[in-house]
Image 1 (spheres, rainbow, N blue to C red):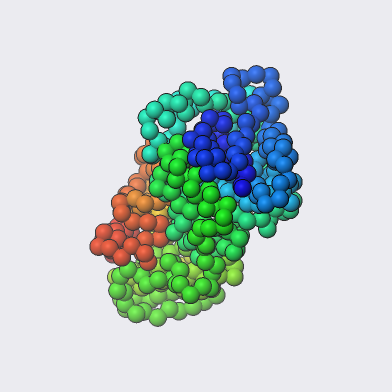
Image 2: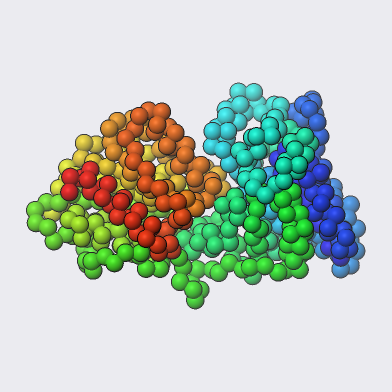
Length: 506
């Protein structure tokens, strides 16, 4: 027999687990849905004192109430915010816990508050500001019926269930979001299962790609004790697919599920597959951390500098400037009469953004000083997580910078990766870009948390009248140049290159 301890997310209480719990108990399993303190009604004086430690204590109380029967394994399930008290409790009762299930949740880190996982960037800032002025007293009101999408996809949730969710929703004590999670590492070796909800943008494929790219927070999930499942629904599978969720939880308890492949496996990672276009076989000229792909055209030529994303582990091989997408773009540019430039920069973790910015500045100095380059006609093209590095060039664009482009960019810090220097927020400085042309390639199958950063940036751009051209690729994924080998994707690469070259007057 398995004892499932189910911990709800923000604004929800034990009621959300009702149908899933019924299906688990019908199969003979023991189920305990945890009622978290301070979430059972309108604001009260008690809500001002409830914090993350209070909720960890709530989960510990349930763990301690489950008898230590031989053969009975405790499985802790944390949905959404609920993973924070789950991890805190598992850290203190590691010997009692058989498995932890991350149910469409973030990946909390030691020392990081749950506020970092709030999906709406504007709301995160608003709550942080409130905390700074009133000491985090009070509660965050529960969403209205039409506002649940702000907290996660409601796809698949029946109308009646959405009505019940709204009617029974409870406010969230602010202190639970603002108190940092503290972990000693005692539970680090426990078996884990991630249940991803694909309608919200999460998928096993995307998790694997994150591992392939060397995302530090995902490497721990490649161990043999870690499994994954995927459900074709939104953020509340206990309401949209309760029977399917119950089955997945039983299979997770049995150790079943998909295993992510650690870097170096037999399968070629997506980012190391061939570029989607046939490009000229132009050799590179390497100087330090910078590669130049020179055009056959005579005279000083404009240059396009391609900036990879990240964070990318310092041990990743090949390094980003040798990835097919980067070399493909650089060779494509050189074949069309400009100098293509790639570089390796030091974005190995989120603290590396200032170092990466230094590396880009050094490359630009090197490139502009080369007699084969027209130093007055330069474009910067950022990819993925490199998008945050745009901010430095929007804040005070030099006259020689003729265009800034970005493909499937991350344009605001992603909470799951941890805090980023506030200097790197493109939306905050786009108003200072003046008439600098911007070209944004946006993919339709983007991860929701990344798509939200692009929309935030585009909204800020519209508000200040920035010169932005958006190239939409509706059926493409993040990093589409090596995985979506379609005519739509090929056309998008050509359109992006034509737009950038036009601003270089090529």
